Image 1 (cartoon, rainbow over the protein chains, first blue to last red):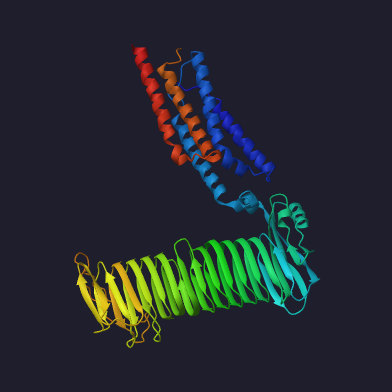
Image 2: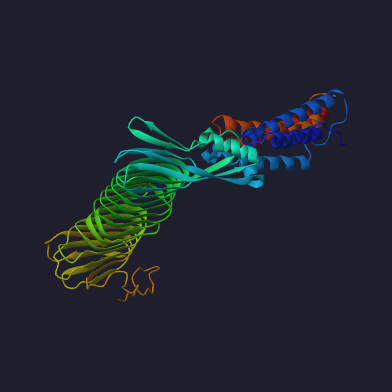
Length: 479
Length: 62
C-alpha cells in the first residue's frame, strides 16, 4: 500500500527555494555549493524516510513493500550523475572560482557593455622595468623610440544591468604606479565585486629599451620591438613575439600557442598542456618544458635547444636548419650535434647533421642521413621499428648493426658484411677504423645505404610487400 | 509490531542504502576515501540487510 510521505513535498520546497535564491541573489555561488554538498541531500532523504518507516512501524501501520519506489531510485541515480558531474566540473577548473560557472547566468541573460579607456601617459627612462597585471584580456605591446609609456584600450563588461556594469567599470580603473625601480600597470579586475565578467584589451607602447613582466589568466599577448627581457606568466594565453632584445621566459599552464621570431636572448617555455610552439631566429639557448599536444618547431637557433616532457628528452647543440616534432614524428635537417634524443613513440628522421647523434626510441622508425663531411659517432636504438642509415660513400666508420627479428639490407657494398642469426641478424664493418655507428632494433629491418645526395623525404617510400608475418624473412624493398 | 519483522527490514533497506550512498559521496568529497574504492560498502550493507531479513523470516516461521 502506498503511504503519503513528506519527502516529495520537501524536495519541491527545497527546489523552489534554491531557484528563488539563485534568481534573487545571482552573486551567491549556489552552483558551487550544490556541487559540493549534494550528497547531504541523499543522507537527509534516507534519514527522513527511515524515521517515517520506523514511526509507521511503531504505530503498527502497514509498511510499504519497498522503502524506496522504483521512481525514487531513478531520481536518485539522476541526482548522483548530475551531482558528480557538477563536482568534477567544479574541481577540474581552478579558474572556476574566478566566476566562470557562476557567471553562466550573466553569459546567458546579461548584456555586453563597452568602455573605451582614456589614454594614459607617463614618462619613464630609456630602459624602464614595467610590470603588467591584467587578468583577462588581450594585450598588444610594442616598443617605440622615446621614453614614454602609453596605455590605451577598451574594456568589455558583461553584466545583468547597466548599473552593475558601471559600478564594475569604476572598480576596475587602469592604474599606472611606480614601485621602487619598476612601473606597474594594473587593470584591477580583481577588485570588482559581483558577477560581472570583464576583459580589458590593452594597447601599450613602451620605450624601446624596456623590459617587461606580465601576469595574466587568459588572453592573447603580442609583443614586438622590445629591447629588454620579457617574462609572461599566464594560465592560458596565446603568445606572439617579434624582435625581442633580451631573454624571454614564458610560464604558461595551458598555452594556446607560442610564436617567437628574432629573439636575441634565450627562450624558455614552460607549460602543462600546450598547443604549438614555433620559434625562429633565436640568439640564445632554447628550453621547452612540459607536455605539448601540438607541434614544436625550431628554425635557426644559434645555441642549444632542449625539449623535455614526461616521455621525451631532446638536446641539440644548435639548429641552423629546421627541427620539427609532434606526437608522432621528429624531423630535423641541418643540425649541429651532439644530438641526444630519448622518447617513447615517434618516427625519427634526421638529415645533414654534424657531430654525434644518440637516439633511443621505444617504438618508431629511425632514418638518418648525416652531413657529407666529417662523420661522427652515431648510436640509434629502437625496440620496435626500422632503422635506415645513408652514409657518405667515402666515409670510414665502424658499423655494428643488429636486429633480433627482421632482415638486413646492405646497399652500401663490400665494406659491410651481413649475416643472418635466427630470425634477425648482424651487419658489421669489415675494417675497423673511423667513428662508431651502432644500430640496434629488437623488431624491424636495418638498411644501410650509400648517400647519393637524395634527401630522405624525396626518397620513394619502400614498396612494402610484407610477407614478414611468420618467417620474418621475405620483404621486398625497392629504391 | 516486532522490530525484527521481515516487512520492516525490507522497508528499511532502501533508506539505509540511500544514507550509505550519501555518506560514501560525502567521504569522497570531504575525506580521502574516493567513491571508486568505497563502493563495495554498498554491497556489504545490502548483504547484511538481506541476511537480517532471512534470519527474521526464519525466526517468525519457527
